[in-house]
Image (cartoon, rainbow, N blue to C red):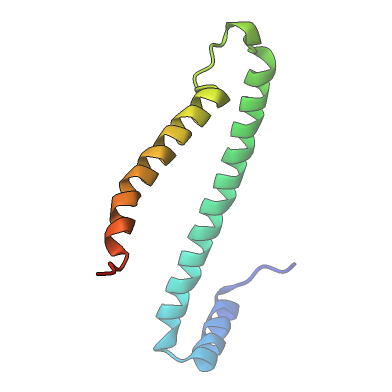
Length: 107
């Protein structure tokens, strides 16, 4: 590939000015710069995520605590079911007086 000298650069700039106009060139250059920055940012973010995933996998494979030592932090299914039934009972009790007031009375 031949090297571009000053005359070739001037010719390229003149063609660009003729194609886009002198007023559009700064906006076009700004948009191109922003696009390049965004592209670089996203590609570096992708490589950082790949490295982080590899690190997490390696740590997970090397440091795995025995499952018997981990206490359950969430309530059991029976406890959650009892709590939901209690809440349901309270809501029904709260709604009964309201529904009886809305019924039409016959005199």
